[in-house]
Image 1 (cartoon, rainbow, N blue to C red):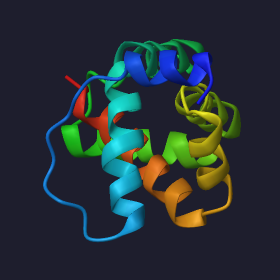
Image 2: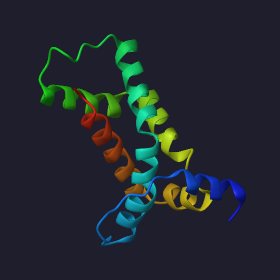
Image 3: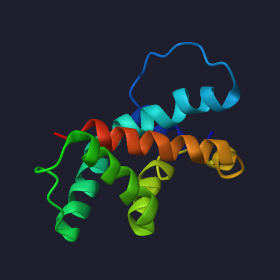
Length: 123
């Protein structure tokens, strides 16, 4: 393991989770969740910038409608989605990135976690 990988791993917060049932869940709990927790402020700021850029007013609609907007924006706005995914990929070690890039299930899990994290910060 090179020095950069050691630094990346040292940045991640500890998260207590239940034992994983499969490799994808283990990757999610040991890699994706800590990275997203560490990047939480940046994820929120990026989505807030998206809202301001699009001049969207989420304050006048129901919580369910806001959650629907987040999900739709994530799936329809490729630039937003790629930026959010990039926030996570940038903090993966080379070994983790290789595992992630070859498994579509891990990409699906990352997408779901990003949407959930943004939805959980809605007022």
